[in-house]
Image 1: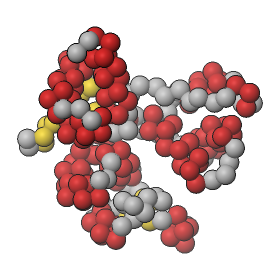
Image 2: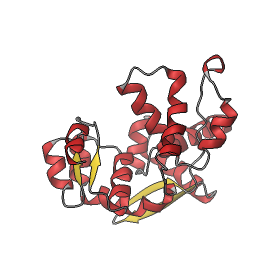
Image 3: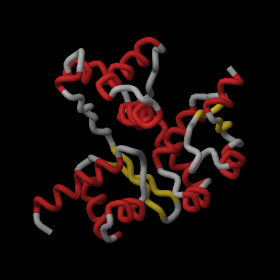
Image 4: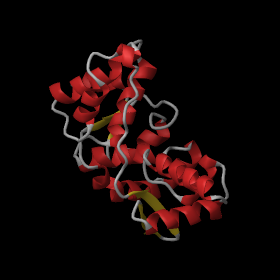
Length: 209
């Protein structure tokens, strides 16, 4: 494998891990590469300090040692504040928040694209959102993935979802709100996860507020 190709594959693996912890099997499947190739690159990345691993039984689960910053791409003609200003305001926050909040707004609203990142900054400022460091709940996420590995495999629940659940559990949230009907809102998933946190749809959560 050439140096350029190897470097590109490293970047793809790091990009995949930005969504949350993953096993070599998951990475190999997602990137359509051999398990041995995924494992080899993960070991190399671990050697450079870019990723870390947590071993549970016979399984190694890898996660970013320090998540890379995600720089939102907002069209120059459509922004009120400069990209540099928005990027600087979002800099302290988790890469997961920066990916998922805009993604949720884009998929579930008719909001113009150019407004999405302004809304993200506004939500953080006005609701005083406190975002814990990405690494804070990785261990808990790994524990949940292992506890619910059958559900994870059956419904192909992503590792990032377990990171979100781990955060809500560790923060002592009364319930976890999601629109994910394909995975977390399934009755069997709700029942299993209820021992840690109640999983609710937005309309159900509103009735409890």
